Image 1 (tube, rainbow, N blue to C red):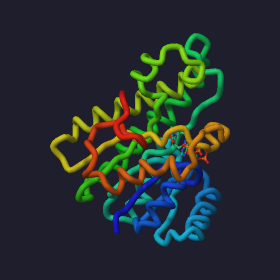
Image 2 (image 1 turned 120 degrees about the vertical axis):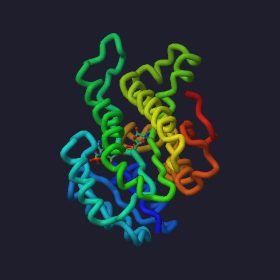
Image 3 (image 1 turned 90 degrees about the vertical axis):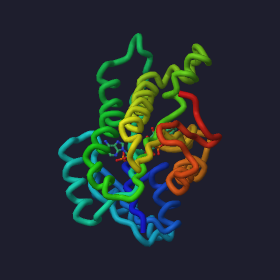
Image 4 (image 1 turned 180 degrees about the vertical axis):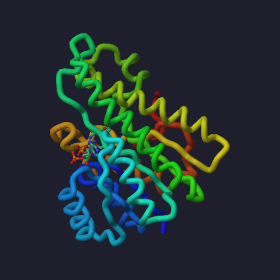
Length: 240
Ligand SMILES: NC(=O)c1ccc[n+]([C@@H]2O[C@H](COP(=O)([O-])OP(=O)(O)OC[C@H]3O[C@@H](n4cnc5c(N)ncnc54)[C@H](OP(=O)(O)O)[C@@H]3O)[C@@H](O)[C@H]2O)c1
């Protein structure tokens, strides 16, 4: 049975991804920063038919927590087939760069970018033991520089400046890591769920979590149909 770790798996798109992959027979571990949320999510996933499900305590913005989580997971499994770097925050508003509070920017990058990189680094030895390891970095269209520069000044995108920049950095991580690992069995992807109704956007998103999780599950289960180092969404490849 293939093993999957999904960070921030207690709600939203991460929870739905755990449900869909769990129902396909994968062995699921969700990373959660609060014990009660982890336990509750596991109970709920079991009720939704996921048989192989467990949680580990993991705050992606805390180096000690990431290290402890790695030790905990390594005591449960010999290898990790799929890492889904899903945990993320949108941060407080306003997010215009001319007025942005630098602390907002630091907090968002700490979770969305540094968290993604550090989790990947700590779990790398477990991933290396899998036959064809897959890393999926959850990104967003608002991280696409091409979309920003071709759309021009767009008030809908502008309010997500700091969050968008953190996802641009995640995309850079995907490309550079894929290049570093080109001659290995690793496959690395950026994937956007699209604008999905979750707590992250006060449920303003237009897609359901089922729809949002769908491209993530497709790439996790059919990675051979996709090119490592690329950015994908519901409609296929997304422009950088
Ligand atoms: N919703 C969208 O429209 C959309 C679009 C594009 C990309 N995305 C991306 O999709 C991913 C999932 O977002 P979502 O929409 O499902 O949001 P969500 O419902 O708010 O879920 C976010 C998850 O991340 C967790 N998290 C946040 N900070 C964390 C930390 N420091 N350590 C561990 N877990 C942490 C949250 O845990 P707590 O419950 O403890 O807060 C929660 O489980 C994010 O990377 C987001 O940027 C979302």
